Length: 391
Image (tube, rainbow, N blue to C red; front, side, top):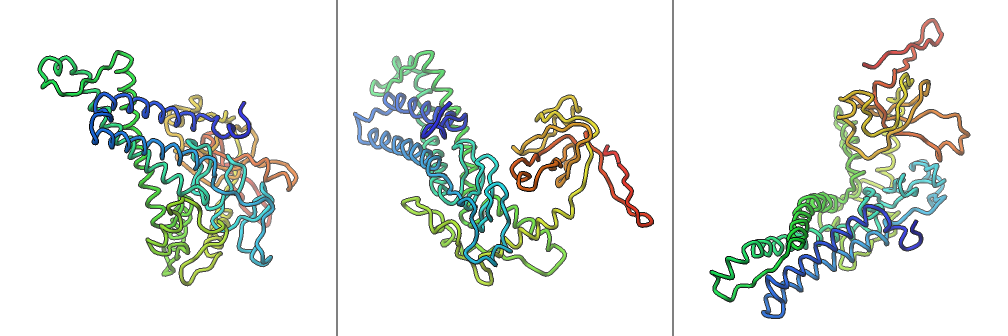
């Protein structure tokens, strides 16, 4: 077990990321010393300096985004004006109201300021406090791996054709010597660099788009639902934090990568106020409650991500999300809020005191074939319950 400073880093995500950084940096510096020695030419020196700068800045911003953190809303937080609490959602875990743009992270166990997402690679959330460092980490990692891919690719080519250059070369070509293990490590590092350029580069594009719009991933989803709610009306929902491209950039990025403001109060566009988005969230929550349906469990759900016992289609078509899969027993009642072809998402009903309900909520995905819908129908003033099996 790791505690204190090392508690954050002792996780598969940061350890994997650090391992990739070490492997790619070490092999690139080793190969570059033979392919374009920094001690022989100015170009070689500048090439090495550029790569080591990319590597150092990648590591610095990686650790900064991990340890600086997104910034957490204080426990028991409430707005300065008590009347404003009517426009805010309540967090039963943190025993306080959620400030504008704040959301509760189940993994961190706290309400996060301007939460974008929880990133397993830094074992922390991305939000107000570390958004600039996280974006810089993605940028320098992509640039560094692109540079490393060129060096490693050229070095591997030289190493595999070393005999040709020894016999038929001009005599001034750099000779790259790599043994069996060296070639294996070089190929492995080259594969990682290509993978990082593609995967991290795509994530960088998403983050740049989010910064240009001043909109987090969660707020994208809120805005999409807001527009969907108004699809049959002439009303247009105005996103309150879109201040124009350059102002949006300066809300996140600066040379020091320090966060702007206090993470609670935000500049907003014309015809909007601090609670424009939070009021929309409350209205969406109310509609969600109206759509909620009761289901009764008729087959036990194991909580497995790939429940082969529930059928091949259920096993092979899971929800594309890292949300929890819950374990359920026959007779359990579940309030379902999301539906997929083979899966349902809901919250298990529990007989708990109100003050403990938020702390011990059991919600997540489970196979659809494990449940039947419970439908209430009124007849002659009496409530009768019928069960409709979900095929």
